[in-house]
Image (cartoon, rainbow, N blue to C red; front, side, top):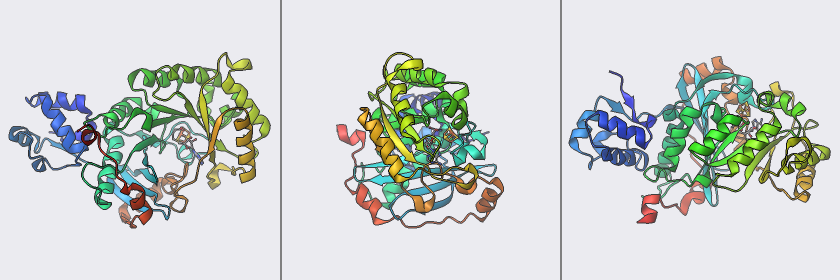
Length: 397
Ligand code: SAH
Ligand code: SF4
């Protein structure tokens, strides 16, 4: 008999599972709350759950997260975990504390098939999709670890925001992604608002449409170039879904999106995509001028300083260039921010994820050594989260 991992099930799937065990569907909600709100993995701990159900679960089911290969804490409070997903593969999850929020950057795949030129995950190639359980396990583990470690009072949470910006292209793992997103949003789970869960995509057009219908959350689109010629080169998926189609999908998404703008991410590459002329081309693109079809896309720009890695052969634009580029967009009426780089000392910044596991052989060696390096989180983390955030159940009580 295979042992079911209950982290794989959103509440509906858990209800079906309970029914299969001959239990009432509502028991699933109790069970779901124990697992996700309280972080319980041991059925004996779930004292108010019918004894009959606990007995059935014992031996048949488990709550199993992935093994932690390493944990690193940055001087700025950022924490990066590397999880073993088997077969010599590992994925990374990063917690980024700020004054008013705690953001978790979650991976959706081991590797990535899109192969963007400026991305170390892309250079690593594609290994496999993560399951729903492996996606939510990153959240489950981080949230309950942080609560314990930071001594957060019962009913407060450490993670307030999620960005699907770790390793992988989430919209190329759609079937596993959506139930995981639903668990993040579920009031009996983590109760995050749709506005605080962001899916970042390199532009898988048909799946942007499906996400809009199935589970609309905040959307970030990795743009990186104002023209098809350049984007074809930087983000190879553009050859399949060119800019005109991508812009049209963004507009359709906004009909149902929880936020009234799309965030366009733009990685600043020296001499490649960072000229004033290219900034003006971007303005034309999002305004819907010329070849790219009628109508503007309501959007904000987030300029990401490129994190270099040797195999890319690319370098980051200078600070002045980034500022000048931002100014052109701002003067054109677009809200534009420059992303602060966090966790640089532990290679946790954008695109550096899994830099250490690019080479699978090395990853394997690291994992067999399995040094769980636990560096204590700096006080910045504690400070940032001390205010505490009420869970939905407590909030409404
Ligand atoms: N696959 C999705 C989400 C993961 S990548 C996507 O591409 O959107 C998350 C963000 O990091 C994307 O905007 C990506 O373009 C950016 N990124 C990747 N490599 C980077 C690097 N080396 N420096 C800076 N940003 C990078
Ligand atoms: Fe994949 Fe995103 Fe990296 Fe492109 S930037 S290779 S889509 S993870």
